[in-house]
Amino acid sequence: MDRPFIFINSAMSADGKLSTKERKQVKISGKLDFERVDELRAQADAIMVGIGTVLADDPSLTVKSPERKAARKIAGKNENPVRIIVDSAARIPLDADIFKKGEGLRIIAVSNSAPAEKIKSLGEKALVIKTGDLKVDLGGLVAKLKEMGINTLMVEGGATLNWGMLSVGLVDEVYTFVGNLIIGGKTAPTFVDGEGFTEAELSGLELLSAEKIEEGILLRWKVKGKIN
Ligand SMILES: NC(=O)C1=CN([C@@H]2O[C@H](COP(=O)(O)OP(=O)(O)OC[C@H]3O[C@@H](n4cnc5c(N)ncnc54)[C@H](O)[C@@H]3O)[C@@H](O)[C@H]2O)C=CC1
Ligand SMILES: Nc1nc(O)c(N)c(N[C@@H]2O[C@H](COP(=O)(O)O)[C@@H](O)[C@H]2O)n1
Image 1 (tube, rainbow, N blue to C red):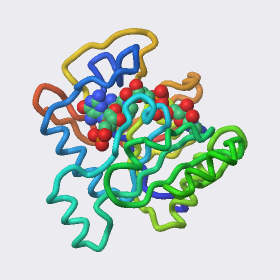
Image 2: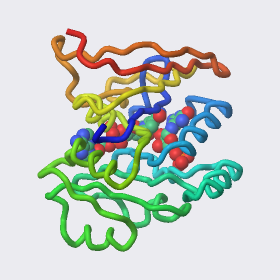
Image 3: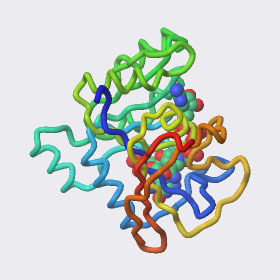
C-alpha cells in the first residue's frame, strides 16, 4: 500500500457528539478507556489531529504512561509517535502544547495558501509539509508520511478531519467509544461532520468487536467503502 494503515479513534456521547456546542471537551470515557487510548498511541508510528482540535483542546498528544514511553525507547523509537496537525492556513499558535510537551518529531501539514512568514516560524519547531492549494491534500500527505517510514497512523479527530479522511477513502478501521451521557445540540461536533455522504456514496462498516468498558461501549469497525 502506498499509504500507512490508518485508523480513527474517537470518544462520543450516546448521541454521537464529540464535544459540547461551545466545543468544550468533556469527560466521555473513564480510566480504562484512557489506558486503551494511551496503548494505541504507544503502538502507532504517528498521531494526527485537525487544527480545530488544537484550537479547542490544545492537546499534547503524548504517550502518558512511563512504562509505555520506556518500551518505545527500548524499541529504538522516540517516547512519542510523530505528532501531526492538519492545518491548511497554518493557524496553530506557536505556544501550542504539542510544541511544549514531550520529545519527538512534530509535523504541521499546511496548504499552498498558508502565509510564508508563519511557515518560517513553524519550521523552527516542526517539519512543515505543504500539499494542496487551499486545503491540505490528505491523500498526498499520507503518501509522504509513508515515504518517511510511517506505517501506522492514528487519527484522533476532530469531526471535520474525520470526514476529510473517510470521504476520500483513507481510513481502514474505526474505534468509537460510546459514553454514558447525552450532549445534544445541532452545532455540537459529531463523530463525522463535513459535507456528509449522499445516499449513493454511503460508506459501509463491518463490526469487528463490541466490548463493554466501564459504563460505555467500545466498538471496533472495519471500513468497507461504498455500500451502493
Ligand atoms: N471526543 C473525542 O474523541 C474528540 C473530540 N474532539 C473535538 O472535536 C472538535 C474539533 O473538531 P473540528 O472543529 O471539526 O476540527 P478538526 O480537528 O476536525 O479540524 C478541522 C480542520 O482541519 C483542517 N483541514 C485541512 N485540510 C483538511 C481536509 N482536507 N479535510 C478536512 N479537514 C482539513 C481544516 O482547517 C479544518 O478546519 C473539538 O470540539 C474537540 O474537542 C476532537 C478530537 C477527539
Ligand atoms: N472528550 C474526550 N473524552 C475522551 O474520553 C477522550 N478520549 C477524548 N479524546 C481527545 O484526546 C485529546 C487529548 O489529548 P492529550 O491528553 O492532551 O494528549 C483531546 O483532543 C480530546 O478531544 N476526548
